[in-house]
Image (tube, rainbow, N blue to C red; front, side, top):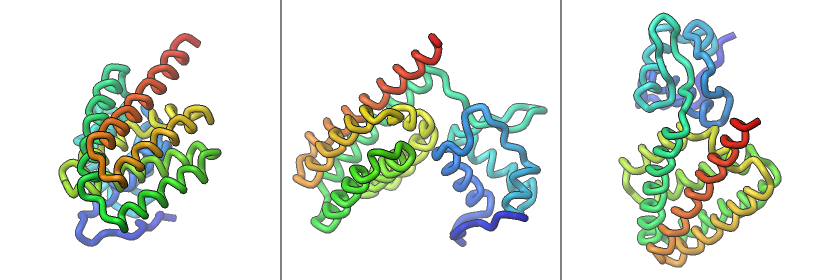
Length: 223
């Protein structure tokens, strides 16, 4: 039975709705790097035409989330170590800029929301999947506070590209505890309206996550 689209946005085309759904699934780990994305199966799942799915997969390729190969179809993009480094370099610059701008513009009501999201992180520190999801949503919310649509869009796309690798960086309780401490410092700086400290704290958090990913990938290569 076809799976209905959830909360479809009438301002979006159908291929874009499908692309957004698949992007979220890739970020959440429902599709792993290298997994095939078969047009027929996806068309049946969502009750749309193969042409709609094909266009959605092309949109995902533009975002760097899929790779379309002649005669073989689409698969989730598998990143090299160099590509991971490059993405994290861009991500670190983006999130630090977002936190700097958020610290300049954050209202008391928005500060309360940030503190609430921080409590959600603390409450879910024992659950890697939930902690990772709330961490990603925190980044997206901070990007929205920056009031820069281009920054928010690019930050969201990169977050989805490296979603699987973010989960690796937060796989152990020790890493999540370090992450939470870094988040506490970042949110404290934003809500205290200290732009430079907020930028520096969030930059360190991004680098910390990058180093954890590279450490884990290196360990897997040696296994």
